Image (cartoon, rainbow, N blue to C red; front, side):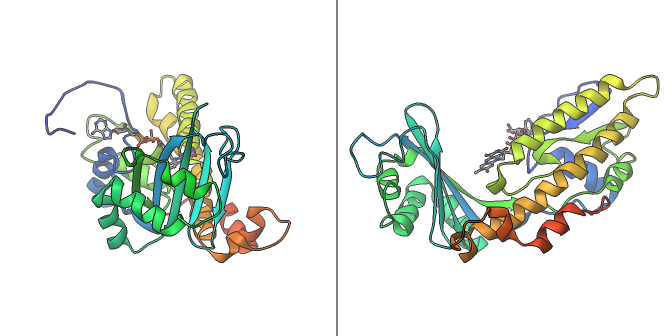
Length: 272
Ligand SMILES: Cc1cc2nc3c(=O)[nH]c(=O)nc-3n(C[C@H](O)[C@H](O)[C@H](O)COP(=O)(O)OP(=O)(O)OC[C@H]3O[C@@H](n4cnc5c(N)ncnc54)[C@H](O)[C@@H]3O)c2cc1C
């Protein structure tokens, strides 16, 4: 990452270097296979951490270190939950053009917090109280991205890439393989499941070596995580729309729409 070259010998290379991972880039670019570029989801996500509200202050019964809350005006959405016994973390997200979102993100924590207060400073408790009590040093915010789902063909083709020369067993894990919107809370969970499946497959590999084990891992990983990528994308749109505040005693998924759910369930294996 810092421009120096370090040489290691290994039987397998697992690219688990995140959404901008260089292993994926080298692996897929070498083969001329579409590496599915980052796709902006149209939303900026901001995070902040503050102390639990003092007892007796407005909204303290909600931001109490035990409860989670979600509030929306049909466009801008704030979610808050306990960070630890004494602190609450909040996540604010709203639609924004990419150039404006990039500029705001680069302007830094104070500008982000000012934008949060501009949008939600007059909302019901405990939102203004949480925002006002947050130290800007504990605020961050970035445009949200995902990538289209890869198909197994991408990995088979990559087995002949320059990166894989002399190292036939290369694969990807976690956000390097399947970055997704954060709104279903699935990214880290899928990465952990990847690790378990990959470890099991590698434990089982025998005289044939690790390559077939990696292809079996990839087939399972792409099918499982691909559904989450699409569902997370759908939820990203839903949560920042009027549907999020639609009245009715219904689950969130019932608002996403039957068509989207069917699309997610029938994800083709050779998606990209
Ligand atoms: C706002 C937000 C909220 C989220 N909420 C949830 C949630 O509630 N539940 C959930 O399951 N997921 C959630 N996620 C997603 C989750 O954070 C990611 O899916 C998860 O961190 C992916 O793990 P990873 O190990 O694949 O990648 P990363 O966590 O990105 O780790 C990759 C690591 O590789 C390192 N690296 C990169 N390049 C190099 C290099 N060249 N050399 C050495 N090291 C390198 C990086 O520094 C980094 O430490 C959220 C994400 C965001 C942005």
